[in-house]
Image (cartoon, rainbow over the protein chains, first blue to last red):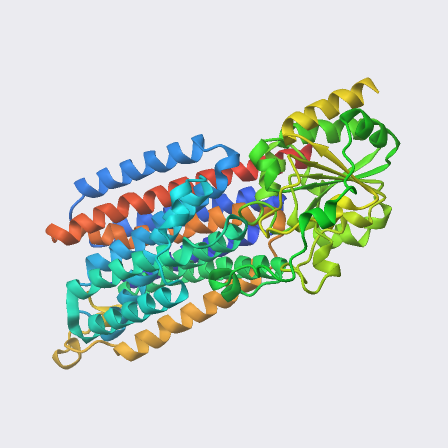
Length: 456
Length: 120
């Protein structure tokens, strides 16, 4: 496949549109236009490939485009906002699969060492992206057997698979041809499962970001196979994006990437006993009592967690916030970077419920003013509001930045039970003097709360 | 597939140069690597400015952009080689198109929710 200068220039135009498109994402006001610019760039790239490229057989292309477009549109229009983590995982997987198939289609041609090397990279990374995203998808769907997919041997198995994969890559570069390529893909598929299956639900934001990055890197590698500058530019943009998100997520958990991928949460020993922490100190409350507290609160902070998504309580929270605001209170939302199952998960849910984005505050912003908050309402969050991260250097979550709701005047935690969060540790917040527990399903509890506020 | 011809401009009819590409393979690789590294820097520069509120649409939108493999898939499916290469190409066209169409559409859906309240 050789490109003409005209094609290269049109590719440049498409690449510029991609960059402008992503730049639009830097503000909600320009983001819609940015996404459309990106789509325009893609259209330009496809039309260029179809019109000036050396396409000889149209019938299969037409079928492929039609099937893909209908499939993609149906997926995109029907998926509920609560299933967005699964959707992103699935899309990452498709991207990785497409890259590995394209590299596979060209690997048989006589090509340069560089192209062959790139094909090996594309096959390995594409396969890891595909199977890794598949496992992530199953985990996000809460399919139980997904956890059992992890091969025995842990990190050692992963290391062996990686070594064998790299050896197969060497075989391909040495002239192994198609058998070598498909061996790489097979090992990559196993590697993707081995890497993803042992990772727990609360670490999903890291995994999704990382797979997002891989899907970009696979596309860039395919770009080197085809000597196509547009694939390289677009792939590296996405690769960079995923890596930055991965880093943000790791920093938000105070864990290294290696620790998320291969580590286990520290266990035993220093772990406090739940009875010791909670014994006799936890105060349960009722919706009527919380409604009275809310009456008097001038500044209310809502801290949502994954439980909000599970209970699909985003609309009720919005109702409660609007109700309180209509009575003169200020209501803000404090969003922890790793609340939920993917970067920005809470923001999407609250945006769906029409909560203005100006009300969604980042962790640092919220913590700076936490002393002025009259009432902090924690909904379905646990580890991200655990003060132990700040106070106990022995804790498994020591050093993880948390939203300091314990420093607000009053804290109300809406939660089903005292069961621990992902870290598996009790939360001293629940036993704090200024904390009240409103036990129950998030949505039901909030509906009752809204009713109580209206009556009171 | 001839990587070496990528940056060749006008074919030179001269017998001596016609056989060899205008720009050597190593140079092409160096240029591709240049593009790769510069794009990485551009990506890092822009993406660090994306606010956390938009991280999910950023992922789905950038994911749609990584569906650019579609261009390669079209070349593979349309090369008319038949057999395995075409089959792989067509499968890649389907997957990449799902990625592109699904990614941009779902991002659009999400972003419109964010913009809605900006006015109200």
